[in-house]
Amino acid sequence: MIKIMRRRCFALILSLMLVLSSTAFAFETEMVSEVDFGEYGQQAYQYLQYIDKHLPDRDSDGGKNTLEAQQWIISELMRAGYTDDQIQLQDFTFENEDEDEITTQNIIVTLPGQSASQIIVGAHYDGTGTGDNGSGTALLLETACRLVKGDKLKETLAFAFFGAEENDTDGSAAYAAAMSDKEVANTAFMINMDSIICGDFCYLYGGVADFKKERVVDTDAFEKVYAISQRLGLGLHLIPWTFDDPAPGFDTPDYPSPSVGDWSDHISFAERGIQYVYIEASNWDIPGPDKQYDGDSETADVGRIMHTKNDTLSKIEKFFPGRALYHLQVFSLLINTVLTEK
Ligand SMILES: [Zn+2]
Image 1 (cartoon, rainbow, N blue to C red):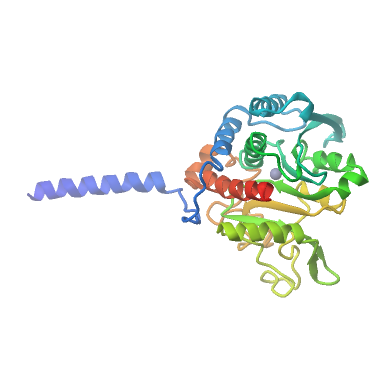
Image 2 (cartoon, rainbow, N blue to C red; image 1 turned 120 degrees about the horizontal axis):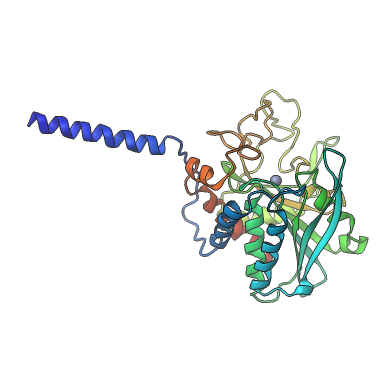
């Protein structure tokens, strides 16, 4: 009896150790359980797996898989029903760190709607991370491929896969610079998807901070999209810091909510006076590595994922089981609802 008890005890400890070792790096994700996501986000997760496995090096400056990534995006678009004349490769050049002139491309896909008014939906496909920005690329591709099969939409949609975001947002800058004044005037707003799976919470950003008047302006697009997210019950987070309530140790917020910094492709459009909404997964409640409350830490448990060796799907799934799919589902349902709303 005692012997059996000892054995059982040993077996229990052993199985406990196994469970602990396999879950030692697993952290939970805040999820909203009552939302039915249907198919939204499922295809994006499959694209994410493909990018992670086959297209890890998409650096616009000589990345091993950059051209292959372009070809793959185009072939998926054509498989979904886009024709040659709906897909445009937009050449542009940028200067790399060695001051060499590099030529690369944006991929622009047009889905005509019933009005001349357009919405630009963009994500940068360059980079070497699965979260940054295989995730935005995957959701953009899912969205473009779904909507080409549906009813004609109210607005014309321009899906833009930007190159060279990691080189000072040069791809989106080239895109915005090539827009005529008329096209700018006809653009309702721009949606930017960058690094949407790794961070602790799903965020929505928008608007431009007026530091003199201590307010955030040009927030109509943000208000509209945020209202839709609330109606859907998606539990999106906003940057918590405002002019009245800056981050601990600050007199004024660097990024008063809901506005955000200039570190991604939305800025190229904001600079032309186009309103933007920007989706990201991050954590603004905790200080970043340089003690600023600027979302630079992404996760409370592991710290920043983007631009680290942890930005692979196996690491992301190990640290945060189920998070990548869940965040893709949240953002897919949101963006598809925004784009198809009558
Ligand atoms: Zn990025």
